[in-house]
Amino acid sequence: MVEYYIDSANMDEIGEIVGAGLVQGCTTNGSIVKKENRKYTDIARDIIKNFPQLYHLSVEPIFDENDLDKAKKDILTFYEIDPTRIVIKLPPTLAGLNVCRWCKNNKIKTNITAIVKPVQAELATLAGATYISVFWGRIGDTGLNPSLILSSITNAKFNPYIIVGSIRGGNDVTGAKFSDPHIITIPHKVFKNFTNNPKSLEVIQEFNRAIIEKEKQ
Image (tube, rainbow, N blue to C red; front, side, top):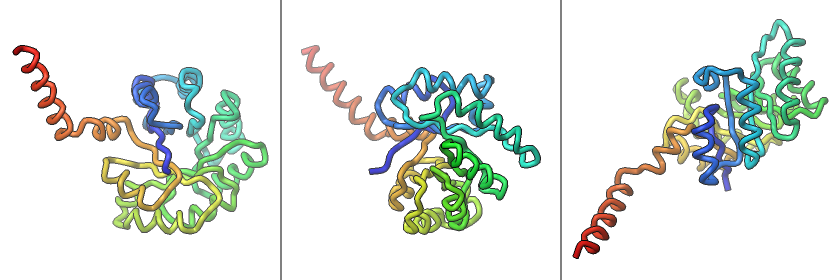
Protein backbone atom coordinates (compact mmCIF):
# COMPACT_ATOMS: atom_id res chain seq x y z
CA MET A 1 0.00 0.00 0.00
CA VAL A 2 1.36 3.40 -0.96
CA GLU A 3 2.26 5.84 1.81
CA TYR A 4 1.34 9.50 1.68
CA TYR A 5 3.51 12.43 2.70
CA ILE A 6 2.54 16.09 2.85
CA ASP A 7 4.47 18.52 0.67
CA SER A 8 4.46 21.62 2.87
CA ALA A 9 6.47 23.74 5.31
CA ASN A 10 3.42 25.37 6.89
CA MET A 11 2.80 24.23 10.47
CA ASP A 12 -0.98 24.64 10.27
CA GLU A 13 -1.22 22.70 7.03
CA ILE A 14 0.98 19.91 8.33
CA GLY A 15 -0.89 19.80 11.63
CA GLU A 16 -4.27 19.45 9.95
CA ILE A 17 -3.16 16.52 7.79
CA VAL A 18 -1.08 14.82 10.49
CA GLY A 19 -3.95 15.21 12.95
CA ALA A 20 -6.15 13.12 10.68
CA GLY A 21 -3.50 10.39 10.55
CA LEU A 22 -3.13 10.63 6.77
CA VAL A 23 0.64 10.90 6.34
CA GLN A 24 3.87 9.35 7.57
CA GLY A 25 6.29 11.98 6.30
CA CYS A 26 6.81 15.52 5.04
CA THR A 27 8.74 16.95 2.10
CA THR A 28 9.93 20.53 1.70
CA ASN A 29 11.86 22.62 -0.81
CA GLY A 30 13.06 26.18 -1.25
CA SER A 31 9.88 27.40 -2.95
CA ILE A 32 7.69 26.01 -0.18
CA VAL A 33 9.90 27.39 2.58
CA LYS A 34 10.05 30.86 0.97
CA LYS A 35 6.32 31.30 1.60
CA GLU A 36 6.84 30.96 5.36
CA ASN A 37 9.29 33.86 5.74
CA ARG A 38 11.30 31.97 8.36
CA LYS A 39 14.72 30.35 8.53
CA TYR A 40 14.72 26.93 6.93
CA THR A 41 16.48 25.30 9.87
CA ASP A 42 13.93 26.74 12.30
CA ILE A 43 11.09 25.30 10.24
CA ALA A 44 12.78 21.90 10.16
CA ARG A 45 13.29 21.94 13.94
CA ASP A 46 9.64 22.86 14.53
CA ILE A 47 8.36 20.07 12.27
CA ILE A 48 10.59 17.52 13.98
CA LYS A 49 9.57 18.77 17.45
CA ASN A 50 5.84 19.13 16.91
CA PHE A 51 5.13 16.09 14.76
CA PRO A 52 6.83 13.02 16.25
CA GLN A 53 4.41 10.89 14.21
CA LEU A 54 6.40 11.71 11.08
CA TYR A 55 9.36 9.42 10.55
CA HIS A 56 10.61 11.32 7.49
CA LEU A 57 11.37 14.98 6.80
CA SER A 58 13.02 15.81 3.48
CA VAL A 59 14.90 19.11 3.46
CA GLU A 60 16.77 20.76 0.60
CA PRO A 61 19.80 22.81 1.69
CA ILE A 62 21.27 25.29 -0.77
CA PHE A 63 23.50 23.32 -3.13
CA ASP A 64 26.31 25.25 -4.80
CA GLU A 65 28.24 22.91 -7.11
CA ASN A 66 31.18 25.33 -6.96
CA ASP A 67 31.43 25.06 -3.17
CA LEU A 68 30.78 21.49 -2.09
CA ASP A 69 32.50 22.04 1.26
CA LYS A 70 29.82 24.58 2.18
CA ALA A 71 27.12 22.26 0.85
CA LYS A 72 28.36 19.48 3.12
CA LYS A 73 28.48 21.87 6.08
CA ASP A 74 24.88 22.91 5.46
CA ILE A 75 23.87 19.25 5.13
CA LEU A 76 25.38 18.49 8.52
CA THR A 77 23.51 21.42 10.07
CA PHE A 78 20.19 19.89 9.01
CA TYR A 79 21.27 16.31 9.70
CA GLU A 80 22.13 17.12 13.30
CA ILE A 81 18.55 18.28 13.97
CA ASP A 82 17.49 14.63 13.96
CA PRO A 83 19.82 12.07 12.33
CA THR A 84 17.12 9.39 12.23
CA ARG A 85 14.37 11.43 10.56
CA ILE A 86 16.08 14.11 8.46
CA VAL A 87 16.57 13.23 4.79
CA ILE A 88 18.73 15.46 2.59
CA LYS A 89 17.48 16.33 -0.89
CA LEU A 90 20.16 16.54 -3.57
CA PRO A 91 20.10 17.26 -7.32
CA PRO A 92 20.63 14.44 -9.85
CA THR A 93 23.76 16.14 -11.20
CA LEU A 94 27.22 14.62 -11.08
CA ALA A 95 28.14 16.87 -8.16
CA GLY A 96 24.92 15.92 -6.42
CA LEU A 97 25.67 12.23 -6.87
CA ASN A 98 29.17 12.69 -5.49
CA VAL A 99 27.75 14.34 -2.38
CA CYS A 100 25.15 11.57 -2.21
CA ARG A 101 27.95 9.01 -1.96
CA TRP A 102 29.61 11.13 0.73
CA CYS A 103 26.33 11.17 2.64
CA LYS A 104 25.99 7.41 2.35
CA ASN A 105 29.50 6.96 3.72
CA ASN A 106 28.52 9.17 6.67
CA LYS A 107 25.19 7.38 7.26
CA ILE A 108 23.12 10.41 6.16
CA LYS A 109 19.86 9.60 4.39
CA THR A 110 19.41 11.18 0.97
CA ASN A 111 16.66 11.92 -1.51
CA ILE A 112 17.80 12.53 -5.09
CA THR A 113 15.13 14.92 -6.28
CA ALA A 114 13.70 16.23 -9.56
CA ILE A 115 14.02 12.88 -11.35
CA VAL A 116 12.44 13.06 -14.82
CA LYS A 117 14.25 10.22 -16.64
CA PRO A 118 14.80 6.55 -15.75
CA VAL A 119 18.58 6.86 -16.23
CA GLN A 120 18.66 9.48 -13.46
CA ALA A 121 17.00 6.99 -11.13
CA GLU A 122 19.55 4.35 -12.08
CA LEU A 123 22.50 6.66 -11.40
CA ALA A 124 21.00 7.77 -8.08
CA THR A 125 20.77 4.11 -7.12
CA LEU A 126 24.43 3.54 -7.95
CA ALA A 127 25.38 6.61 -5.89
CA GLY A 128 23.65 5.13 -2.85
CA ALA A 129 20.50 7.26 -2.57
CA THR A 130 18.02 6.29 0.13
CA TYR A 131 15.08 7.82 -1.76
CA ILE A 132 14.49 9.13 -5.26
CA SER A 133 11.80 11.67 -6.08
CA VAL A 134 10.15 11.35 -9.48
CA PHE A 135 8.49 14.63 -10.52
CA TRP A 136 5.16 13.68 -12.08
CA GLY A 137 4.01 17.16 -13.11
CA ARG A 138 7.41 18.24 -14.43
CA ILE A 139 7.60 15.13 -16.61
CA GLY A 140 4.22 16.04 -18.06
CA ASP A 141 5.50 19.55 -18.76
CA THR A 142 8.09 18.08 -21.13
CA GLY A 143 5.37 16.43 -23.20
CA LEU A 144 6.24 12.92 -22.02
CA ASN A 145 3.83 10.53 -20.30
CA PRO A 146 4.64 10.56 -16.56
CA SER A 147 2.89 7.23 -16.07
CA LEU A 148 5.20 5.50 -18.53
CA ILE A 149 8.31 7.09 -17.04
CA LEU A 150 7.30 6.21 -13.49
CA SER A 151 6.37 2.64 -14.45
CA SER A 152 9.75 2.10 -16.08
CA ILE A 153 11.40 3.21 -12.84
CA THR A 154 9.23 1.15 -10.49
CA ASN A 155 9.50 -1.92 -12.73
CA ALA A 156 13.29 -1.71 -12.59
CA LYS A 157 13.13 -2.52 -8.84
CA PHE A 158 15.82 -0.02 -7.87
CA ASN A 159 16.92 -0.09 -4.23
CA PRO A 160 15.89 3.45 -3.19
CA TYR A 161 12.37 4.13 -2.02
CA ILE A 162 10.45 5.87 -4.80
CA ILE A 163 8.64 9.11 -3.95
CA VAL A 164 6.33 10.72 -6.50
CA GLY A 165 6.29 14.51 -6.21
CA SER A 166 5.18 17.50 -8.31
CA ILE A 167 1.57 16.50 -7.70
CA ARG A 168 -0.89 19.15 -8.90
CA GLY A 169 -4.28 17.48 -8.54
CA GLY A 170 -6.22 14.38 -7.68
CA ASN A 171 -5.80 12.84 -11.11
CA ASP A 172 -2.03 12.94 -10.63
CA VAL A 173 -2.36 10.92 -7.42
CA THR A 174 -4.65 8.38 -9.08
CA GLY A 175 -2.34 8.04 -12.07
CA ALA A 176 0.78 7.67 -9.93
CA LYS A 177 -0.76 4.93 -7.78
CA PHE A 178 -1.15 2.67 -10.82
CA SER A 179 2.64 2.54 -11.13
CA ASP A 180 3.01 1.29 -7.55
CA PRO A 181 5.53 3.75 -6.04
CA HIS A 182 6.36 3.53 -2.35
CA ILE A 183 5.31 7.10 -1.50
CA ILE A 184 3.33 10.00 -2.99
CA THR A 185 3.90 13.46 -1.51
CA ILE A 186 0.85 15.68 -1.82
CA PRO A 187 0.29 19.43 -1.28
CA HIS A 188 -2.22 20.50 1.36
CA LYS A 189 -4.61 21.96 -1.23
CA VAL A 190 -4.85 18.59 -3.01
CA PHE A 191 -5.67 16.85 0.27
CA LYS A 192 -8.37 19.48 0.81
CA ASN A 193 -9.81 18.88 -2.64
CA PHE A 194 -9.98 15.15 -1.95
CA THR A 195 -11.93 15.67 1.26
CA ASN A 196 -14.21 18.47 0.02
CA ASN A 197 -15.84 16.74 -2.92
CA PRO A 198 -18.94 18.80 -3.87
CA LYS A 199 -21.15 15.74 -4.36
CA SER A 200 -20.20 14.30 -0.96
CA LEU A 201 -20.88 17.66 0.71
CA GLU A 202 -24.22 17.91 -1.07
CA VAL A 203 -25.30 14.51 0.29
CA ILE A 204 -24.18 15.32 3.85
CA GLN A 205 -26.04 18.63 3.79
CA GLU A 206 -29.16 16.81 2.56
CA PHE A 207 -28.94 14.34 5.44
CA ASN A 208 -28.38 17.16 7.95
CA ARG A 209 -31.46 19.02 6.69
CA ALA A 210 -33.53 15.85 7.05
CA ILE A 211 -32.45 15.47 10.68
CA ILE A 212 -33.20 19.12 11.46
CA GLU A 213 -36.66 18.87 9.86
CA LYS A 214 -37.40 15.68 11.81
CA GLU A 215 -36.42 17.31 15.12
CA LYS A 216 -38.76 20.25 14.43
CA GLN A 217 -41.78 17.95 14.15
